[in-house]
Length: 278
Length: 283
Image 1 (tube, rainbow over the protein chains, first blue to last red):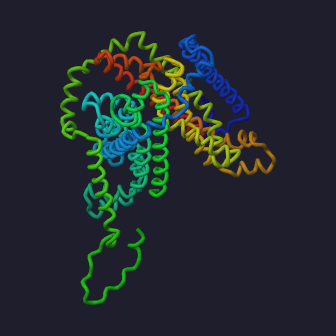
Image 2: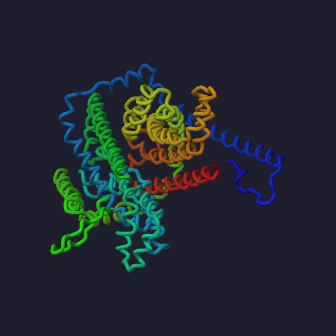
């Protein structure tokens, strides 16, 4: 966008003319950039919204509102049967996060460039692991594990665990890279082994940050585990899918309300947990 | 934690010196208690969820054979097809539009939802917080399904789902960014009689401009990641291809599509990291 600050001439002070010229160039570059953005918006709107949408089927705004109105209302009779799936969802999230934490220990260890054992190999390996885990959506991971271990909660747990590696490992590795090297050197100087260096030198320094990242990821995992049932991994998603397929729209709303309540609970818990940790 | 800093009471001569430990008796059990409760919870959860642990062990072998037999040669020709590439471009457009609309919606939400700048802490603040939390709490898949049932298949529901998703995502980050500003400039403007909009435009916005740009780029990246799969439930884009091939058990094509998704997400991540680093240097 702007190159004014990119290459300052060290000795010669820029004259007023220089500044004005570079600003003008800057303005042209900015104008071109925003024009490009605008063209992209117009093109995208044209392709996705105007051409691709079946406006005849949607009809008037009134019909859309009517369709949306079907969802307003809560099927209270469904709530007793939602308690079990809600607990299941919560448990899948907890187990998935725990398993993810264990899986991310090697990734965080290899991925922090100050403690990685053999930099040319292990560092890119860990980075690849993190990126793979983050770039594949949880639905795709769940499909993958449903194919591997069959329908049920286990597939959901594995999908969440693999999906959490990326974020936890990345944040932990960054925390490890930022540590104070003093304690590590002190322990090494007194003859501590590598293992002792990690336990007494590194872990105490990063533990609060890592714990808060884990709690944060747990909160996100609740959100994710609520939809894993859509592809056969148990929990509230399965109920959602069933209600949707039987066209019980009020039931759908009740499931969403249950999900919201669960997430609210998780958010409150995570807020206080992170406050006590830090 | 502070207890080990206290001076230790002198032991009367004759009583044996106790071995030093970091925590005294009741506190020393807390660590074990936490580990024990985690173990108990694990056991109970595995029991409750009915998890077949024997399958977990057999998983790797089965996964290996499945991948090698069915998914292995990914059908690269399939994803090089012009038809498919068109869907890829549509996915990018969907993510772009969804993120853009979501960002536009989240600027006022971020303003109203920031505790220091909100026009009214009693009414506007909780409402804005509630809206942004609601958008964030409902997963993008659920938004997609809801919009597909309301307005039918196509890319419009995808755009709407991504819009709600990015609104929730960005509004929280925007609000946090506004809460972290330096209030001195705001107070100065308020003292000289500026109104709410003037404070926002000349007092707050210059301070958060760079951070907002970074967040916007990141939102686009996340929206693209979500856009690759919202089509799974009928909202257009590559997800629809994925779903179709999964239903037809065209596993080699599925492998190819997954590879293409990973590739595109990696590219978008590189672009977003580069753009964010660029924006940060312009600060």
